[in-house]
Image (cartoon, rainbow, N blue to C red; front, side, top):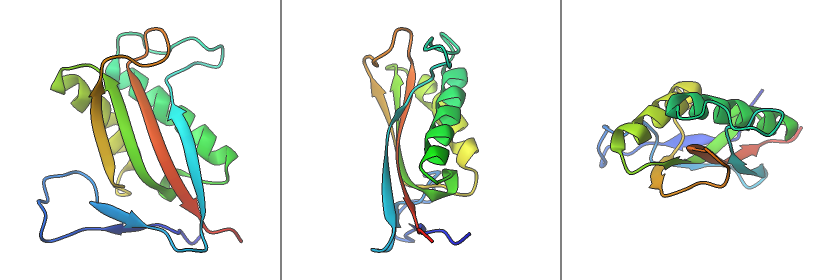
Length: 136
């Protein structure tokens, strides 16, 4: 399947970042704006309480379900924002590594942010995403 996303890199910027610096989608693509993917189980309970990596993995799983319901996949994501309820950089990195590994070589532009609190009881991670697809 042809993908709508083009990842953009710049030789003028550091290559230390583990993601592309920008991405584009053609005008004829359909944009999909996902609600923040939360680490919730089917029954509404929070998964992996106290575990940043476990919650990031569940949030990625739930994001993939929302993408599939929209006719898209991880390879159609054009950008992400990973929110982590912590002031500790190592907690942010733990969550980020799970998200980064899930996307593999589709390293979309991303922002990683520490926040004070998220919406669900015991929630530590949330992933926002925008995707773009070419409709057939």
